Length: 526
Image (cartoon, rainbow, N blue to C red):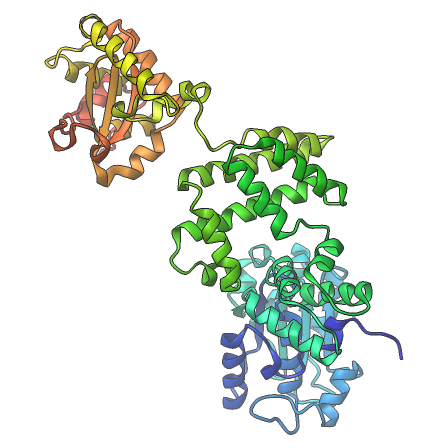
């Protein structure tokens, strides 16, 4: 007998065999038992989640002569003919290959005739979003007023491409990604049926690589069985898939944390030499740091990450070495690196160059570019010795009078400066910055212009707290006051002044702004 792929051998044959879609199974079984079967269904979801399998089971269940708890018996003549593909009343169409309006017009003509052998005529249209506009229009009238003996089951991975007129005429069911635990249980069951031994690490790697698709997981298992010819280990799976193993990713993350870029480059070279794709390695690093972020912030990360407690505990242990902002910055930089790699003729070199920039420790060289985001009370470099800090403190005290004379804004004038700064931002069409500044309060002293947000305005601060806005404000303050300032954005709780810091300044009214900037601000008449 010709060999069948595992995903075909172990395809669900009744509703009770479906995995991870209990909400859909229960709804369909209730409809069958009550006799309230809809004339049209739309099954949506990513690949390998059971859309086509469910459609085939439903086509047998509505036509079964001896249904068992709303499941098809698969023993009667109707079930057997449908399973064998010989039932002319159950038609499966691949919309990717039959996109034209003529194909749908044929269906429109056929539905007028009653079924030949079965109770219902069932049309299963897979990847329905691939139909042309004309084909959708031809299908529309049939879906709106179909004969009582016809059921349409449409399946798609991209439901947003299906016209709203079609969506509104179907009962829509969304198929969820299958959880890692359910995938691992199914793989274990298949391995037991095939007398194949598989370890826990291999199960973890396969379930992760499958990304919620049962079909993909069984296809990977199929390759592993052929390659291993015996026991399947995690090492075998990573070799077949060409992905980096957990140990390598943890070692690279540790090297980034300790700022040992040499070890990072060695691990990257070792991994790529083993046949791993550098772009794929970047995606796995992004996923690794995402796991670290969740492990740092979530009380029970194993439930969110859908992994064993032991593996999740390893992420928790490593996550404690990082700060939240360090992990988020690394993820952002890796995502930018991924885009660069996709456009580069040499993605390996781009990976090596990009990984060197992922140091999480702040050095004096980086201080200059990051200083704008620090509150004034933290104006000391990280790595300075106590003696060096004391020396700088003495120098600062000697020059404080000179700085105050040259850069202090008189308290009676700071409101005018503040209003002019907000108006400048509005005039330059920096709407987000101008709006955020209206909810803040200014403090200026010792060459530093601090913009203080109340703690409940943390979101506003995060929107404008960046290098470009800081430099823009410093430039405007130079023009307004003639003095040089360093702009800082802080929350009230971060400021050394605390509750003593001034509250927000009353700004111009909407009417005043409309008079000053008629081309930017308008007032709609009721």
